[in-house]
Image 1: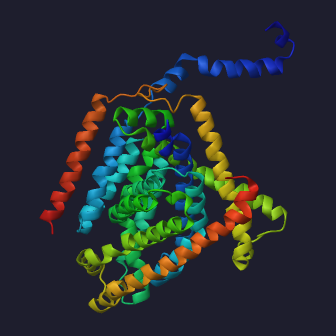
Image 2: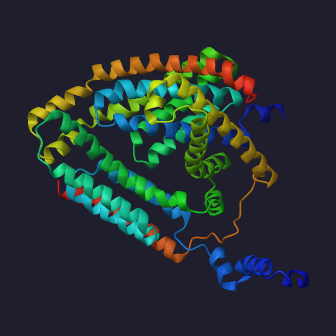
Length: 199
Length: 260
């Protein structure tokens, strides 16, 4: 009986699925206006996403304090990205699910710092998953672009946007905004969710 | 029944309701769920993921786009097929423009990546359109863990609900003078955050509670194979479809290697 209660049950699964969908929809809506300009997308859109989605993550982990929550969250996001055809980011999200679950072992779900840490890990995985393909699959993109009839110069200028250095910068900035997001999440918990009796 | 005869309006209304499900033709339509099995739809997504990622030549990508249109037409989703064709053709034509400017070039590059991902996304769409009962039942026949099945079924259904809830919250807040225009929302980010996102989150958790309560009452948490009101089985046509999808996917990859 005791052992069964440690793992996520039916109620938690439904909650996690719905909040994951809400997060995905919000991510889509926010990133749409920025999609055309890579630098804005990398730094500004990701920053807004991380701050806005922080409360969702904090609420989810506080409402379902059982083993498997983080893994299911990462797994569902991975599934979504497999369906829309971005296999690489799906792999990083699965990794996030496993590592994040390890962070939460013990009494992690009651510990705000560990929840914040796993959210920061999530944001790092988000950046790595979306931008590392530009480095690993650079040849393919260059081939595509030259097939489109672009000059060599502009192709080089564009691929220079996605250097390991800029990606590292993006990871750092998204980690900072993710910690702000987690903080905002706890503020919202105190101010709105607890008085509203959601918990 | 006699008492209703005195009120012709109500009587005709009731008989209309009663006649609908009892008509043998309609009942047959409901039970024999026409269309390709969910397992085949799932396999199509997996079979499409690899080519959409690996294909390099433009010709094979175009052939794959044609396959997507055929797939949507076979599943009788003509509207989705038309939407796909229009968006894909627009992106394709945009990329034919000769560009030297870098800013436009980067936009076009995002489009070219998006064009790839569109292929799998539209192949995946029919899975979301399948009735929930059929989806859960066929996934449980594949021995997919119950946790994943339920989460999937709930996720596909919740996407439109998010928009509905958002609209309801927006209209009630407009009534109070908050965020009457989109610009107003952007000008006070903190206020719109607290007045729109927080209610949306609270509504979502309430919906999750209600949904899981009603599902548990109907025995959704009981272990064992799930059956469906509609018949779920792999027909010969489904098996042939599965083989055709596998051949097409492998063929695309082979063609791409040949034409490189």
